[in-house]
Length: 191
Image 1 (cartoon, rainbow, N blue to C red):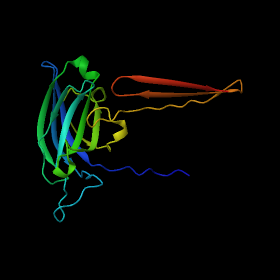
Image 2: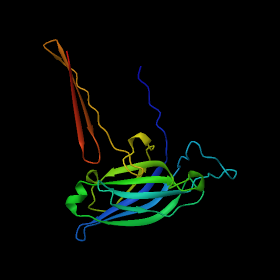
Image 3: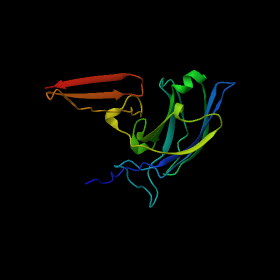
Image 4: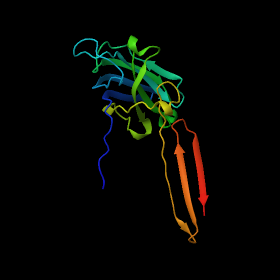
């Protein structure tokens, strides 16, 4: 029988995106995040107060050379960032780009550069930037095994096609498309 799959809720982020064609400037206004899920091993140091200190890293993909980090918000699962970042990007580059928002825990208990709480990826070719766009986006869990750099997770599309060729063969095709732009194609023939 079919059932629903329970998704892990990592919170959501509120932002706006605008593009000035004449100046080739992409403006991202990171407003706030809501209902951030603390790391599973985090503790609560004050009654009712989470022990996470979230901050957000905004990266323009695929190059990863252009990124911005917000200020750390202390002891909250609902940070108010209200920070803006501007990327110099041509319209041709824009259609092949995506924004990645990575939410980190900057608390001392996280140790090092901070534990990644989750990510949001927004392909810019999927939204109309003729006017400023305001949106809430769900935060996906960070998957450590798929880490490419920093807090990134790569997207993957898998397709399996099976069919009978003269009753003797099965063809299975697995196609993985990674956001970095590389494509891996594997074909198995069995008979």
